[in-house]
Length: 139
Figure (cartoon, rainbow, N blue to C red):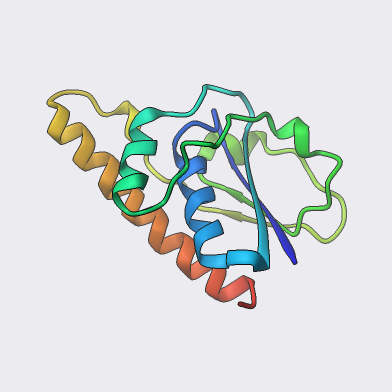
């Protein structure tokens, strides 16, 4: 079984969404974790837009990357430039992948515009996650 760690700045939105989709697409063939270089708590808007697509991340917690430093990790996926720059090094067979997704929590204004932006980024993360699993995790 592969172990995948998704890393973002605060482990509140983008990494949580990727965590949910990677686990959905991998099923029991991967152990997916997510963490941040800081913790900002789980973003309720991320929970909402993921639930709209049938993925429940409401039980996720916001964790620091240091909590997983002792684990063997097959893949580290950074989903923002800040986390990519601050990502610790895993010695051994760990493969790193980086894809910078826009931070939906930075958009302000009309609530419908804000939520549509979350959905747009969610859909980008979903497509990335599905392609990543197809390429890297035998199911």
